[in-house]
Length: 471
Ligand code: ADP
Ligand code: ZN
Ligand code: MG
Image 1 (cartoon, helix red, strand yellow):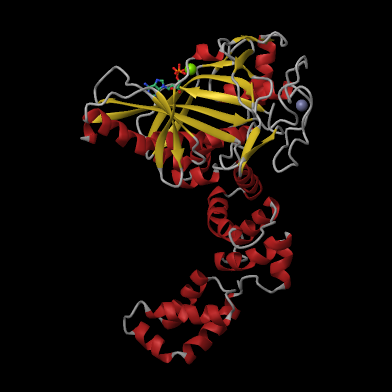
Image 2 (cartoon, helix red, strand yellow):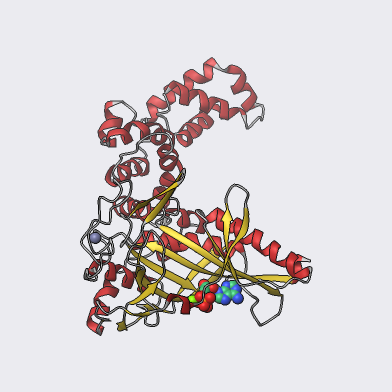
């Protein structure tokens, strides 16, 4: 019965901007694990009469995010008061943007499996965060450190048709914010929060069904699970002839279900009105152009460039462009070594593997030197792999290191021939086998030579010499 229905979802994502100070006051925005209520002032603590001043850095980050997401950044936007009463919001209202947000529209391209999809934004607006409540025994504790932190709320269109769509979209969005440096977008730390709206409809239907809003999910995996759960719940209800109601449901993590919390409030409940203490935000073309120049190359653009310019396969390009730090490191190594293929192989292979085991401090210059040593035939990829852990610990110079340790590959044919002769006389059976037509036997001989030379011989060279000597 599930095949008859299609999932429709839209997201409301809050991201905490990575500014120095809060949205409307000069309190520090670096509130993570600080003593409760140590970073507050009359403005963010909501004292009556305290006057807010818009943080320019927050505005700039909101605009840059909008530009990166191809939004229409508005030349006129304004703030509004959104009233609600909750102990973590002492002023009784949040300063948000209602009918004139900073950004409208926008889109993000995402790969869902092999398929490239585009998902649309409805708007992005700025608003301040509330404080944090902790419930303990029979009391509730309020910490206002987070109150007044700058948020952007990104609202999508109801454009998602599966939980995979949503999952991949959120990962790409997170990556985008991180590349921009506008938010850490970490769900576990509450730097990114996402409410998911979901409805169902018969496949082929044009009209949307009644939506349910799901809250309280603290990871991308939970969002995916909550959507899958809710889809099944709604289909079952409709099939039973029940009428779905528009409501807010909470995700219960340990039971992996959603439960009804309240029927949805209307915007009239918030009694929005223009914030009288803040002037509208007005931007001109010159300012917008300046912001455009500040938008860096993003993950997806880097990926495309790695594929086109460096001829890397999609998967490799994708992993290397995943995080800004790694992408920039890779590009630096390519620039110095001029060998994108080897740089990609070394970083994706030995370098990333090593990072899981130990601290890796190697500079791009020294990693590029390892590549150069391989290119010049001075070391084999085997030696490269072996020296990487030592070199990485304190960023040693690989050229000096291999010289000091006597690891430079033997390129003297005469010397190698002597070793080959020795190995042949020590392994007459292998020689006999090879001469008798057993091609594979040569592998054993090469192995012995490598062992004798402590890996310093070049295997293709050894192979050639052995063949010559045995022919
Ligand atoms: P409301 O007026 O209830 O706040 P909005 O139209 O502002 O609703 O949309 C809020 C969020 O819900 C948006 O992310 C939007 O994409 C999503 N949404 C709207 N209608 C539906 C629907 N029928 N099914 C799923 N999501 C929806
Ligand atoms: Zn403050
Ligand atoms: Mg709405």
